[in-house]
Length: 242
Image (cartoon, rainbow, N blue to C red; front, side, top):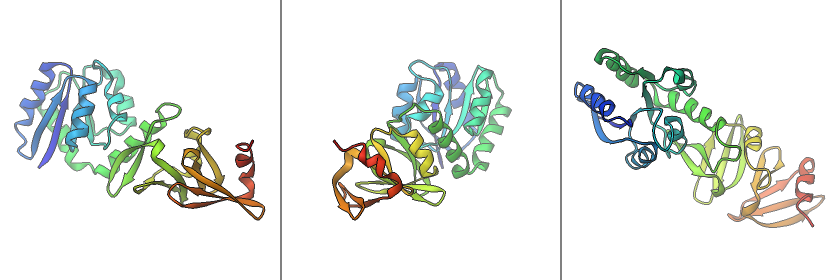
């Protein structure tokens, strides 16, 4: 049984989707919302597998809603506006239902939901949303087991290169980002997150102490992790000394 949420600012749009869903016994409707703010609350609370999502809504757009979710479900956009279709597929939505649509067209969209692999659709969606987010995001999308979740960026103590990926270390856990450490360095606030090694970025707000080590330094973080500052990044540390 797959869980579904409907988000549409028009009652007629929500009613139509509910009517069409009656043909699918393996889908259960958990809730609905008529604006972006309520949509975020409902989706984060119920963690649905699928969301039918309008784009033009009061409060925030459907694309804005996605950037506020703790976990990313599979998405079918349902809208009267065709100009967003390209962006919808750029973020790897499963389908784009252009109102008015028939029951047959709706059935095709639902069948695509079941054929799509959550890992293959949600990850590109997450990456696209992260790239298009504000200059210094307050939350960051990471992988935990087979799910994509968001965590507050200020909880990250340090970042460690992990091949083509990166590990984000917090007090409670270690998460995996699909981005390399250099990409994260470009996206994060350089006044807070500084590169101290080709494989390490530290959060200055989480530094416990700095110790001289030969011609370099060791940085002890609040979780007692020790990070070596390499010679090539010494200037980044020296800029902080007064």
